[in-house]
Length: 299
Image (tube, rainbow, N blue to C red; front, side, top):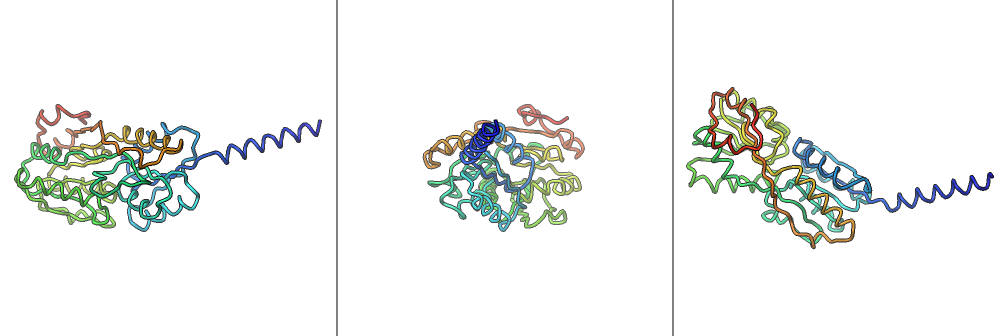
């Protein structure tokens, strides 16, 4: 009897060890701990399943923290590293060429050369001129404040794209660079604010909204999550679609596919959110041409 019990116990241990050895570890890095990335992650974890162990890193939005997060995941032997946002993705590509990298929430990855044999993913590119046009319909813009970060390459690309629209749309960009945190006193002298996909910027969205309320100007963002804080207009790639697509790519990689064999996906679902409540509080009128096409309207 005792011998049988010992045999069963040993067998269970062997099964547990075998299962643990077969388990795959997927490391995940958020460029910043913001709602948009949290929504991507929820969709990702719901889809990727329970057969993998997910180790999540939520560093502060700075180069040293991104580097440390990647090194932690390489240190534990992650089978795949999933990155939300361009800064985390670029850091992971710099730190390792051996571990497959899947990204999501990255604006125009081709412009930043976020392509290669060990990296692929889901782009979150949305047309900046559409955002500016909608903002201009809410309030005529002569000077557009563009909030970005010099340490986040994707936001520099967005500044470039915004400046391309200046001549045709008749406005001037006023660049507002953010480093460690948003400073309300540096946001002034503009007719509207454009918030890029800057992790530090989105972390300080409350301060940006306070500055906008002070000057009675509308705000627009390229990432969801700020509208509940008071962002007037949001146009962003659907985070659920981003997470689901990233999960499907991870499954394929874990099954043996190489990232270089998987084509970068473009967003099919772009979500527009209009905060009518905030616009009215600012004394601004949102035309039906803007609110009528929104996926969500906050009354």
